Image 1 (cartoon, helix red, strand yellow):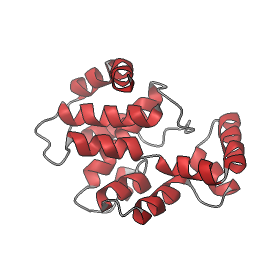
Image 2 (cartoon, rainbow, N blue to C red):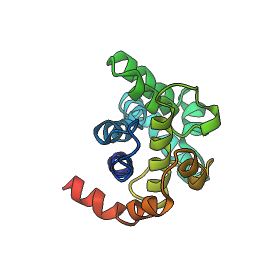
Image 3 (cartoon, rainbow, N blue to C red):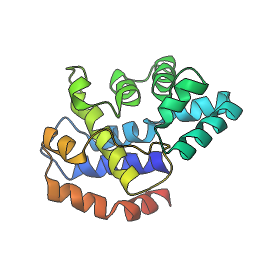
Length: 173
């Protein structure tokens, strides 16, 4: 549910800012939908270990990636990137899977930097609304900072957030 929510939120953000030609609705939806694919891969390959990861993340109210690295030896970002490379997915998508959640200033200066940042913003907005389960309890960035860096309109973003639950329910049905 969380991944669907991030895909829908990213798509709505892109659609509501038509002047942003670097953010395409279909592409951002797929990037949002697959941004946490590494979690599914780790859970599928190591279900008992991943159950322990979730238990620790929930108990400590921390960042699930920290506990993935501690228990499994790698996090879902890296596992997702490796899976995307194995499937020969486009680099833009692989980078969204790998780098989403990273601070904007730490992202490489590549042409799809804003795409990665948009997925990070959509993830953050969905986590704040508690749509689905992400296993990430701490916010390392501020939504306002990403909105400003992406040159998005704040009131328009607020409208996307307001309809978040309904948009996800509609898409899920």
